[in-house]
Image 1 (cartoon, rainbow, N blue to C red):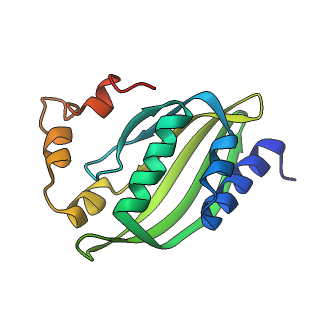
Image 2 (cartoon, helix red, strand yellow; image 1 turned 45 degrees about the vertical axis):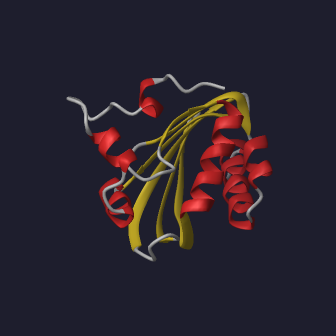
Image 3 (spheres, helix red, strand yellow; image 1 turned 180 degrees about the vertical axis):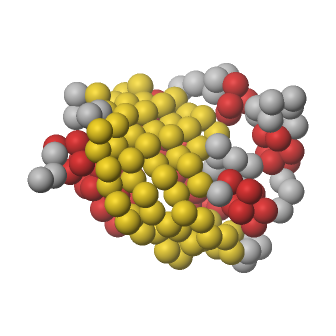
Length: 155
């Protein structure tokens, strides 16, 4: 039997597949934390719905999602894990990348409070080539120098 949290996440993915970013955002808390590691232009840590909206805008500017499929949704209390796969084309260069993914959602009172995206970040960054953002993201002693990872970007 599907629970309310799993249904919320399923509806979120359905909205994303229709391009309805506002419906995706409405499933999130006002103070949502969104983390997408890597060197691609849309990667970084975001805080609040406004910055998550910026993530989706940058994703849309950067890539065309050729395939984005969810294979399994796993629930353990307030944690939901979505396993899937994607294939995307970098709009600027036409380069293609493919990766399996795991998206981890933390729910609070029926809404998404935290999102952590895991995928082959090297495949995505490589498709973009060596960008300024990639050099910044990978340039520090711990590979965490970009302001999006430092917590300095806030709504």
